[in-house]
Image (cartoon, rainbow, N blue to C red; front, top):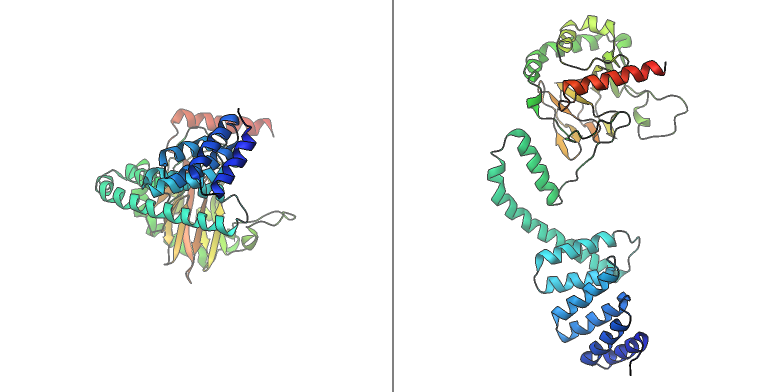
Length: 385
């Protein structure tokens, strides 16, 4: 005569209390057969098999519980413990990682669960460190021989796979051009004219220093929010020369007084293959960051451009992060990045930091694509005049 799943489960629990794991397993098996969609019954069955030392049956029962609910935290923990006990490190890492991810969603875990989560995090950290050691020993010699682009990308891949860094995505407040690589820093090989910038950097710096000796109205706060703007992370820099700017070009319009005072810089900018979009591009300015000033993490407007930094005055303790990569500015050494990927800058020194910043086309765009973008902007602006 068959019995209900509830009755079989009750008898199984009684058998466990009596120390009869074998009878408990038989009863729990009857319960799960009668109600295969109840994850708790599969967990009870797994517990009985664990007491019997039957690892294969315990695993099958726990997988049955996960078949009812892949987010069954109790089943995941027990399965992680089983794999760890059997030294099945790959499976244990997978299951403990899932436990940690689910556990992070619990605001106030009970002390027992907190201890299990701490163990899971420690296990994952130890296994990841072991993997990292083996990976670095085996792959670092090969990766070090890659060209600059492949070396950066392979390094980011390995760091992400090992859980050592996040991968950031484009966040465009304006135009987003699809399918462009979301690379944090563009390979310098896209910009052969960086060598000319290096040569011109001392003359550009000299013009900046002369300008700063008597800036007049040329120097203004970079952040200038309208009155009535709600509080934001930009408030400390709002209308504050802690981050100042001297514009040579702004949204496609020349700032002639500054260009006239910086003729060498103006000539260098005029020779570059930059975007020319009335009302939008180019923009070029001297960015001045006072001592002990930080620019908070933020993203830009469009991924159709690359932002170029030519460092001119760089004291120690300055830094710049784009996505998961942090670089130090080196005077005269230009680099380009995608500003639609989260970035931030800081000057922790006691001296002024100065960088020439300007935009050019994203190097992954073809000339035809550049034309489409420029034509679109022109038409959109004309229609909305």
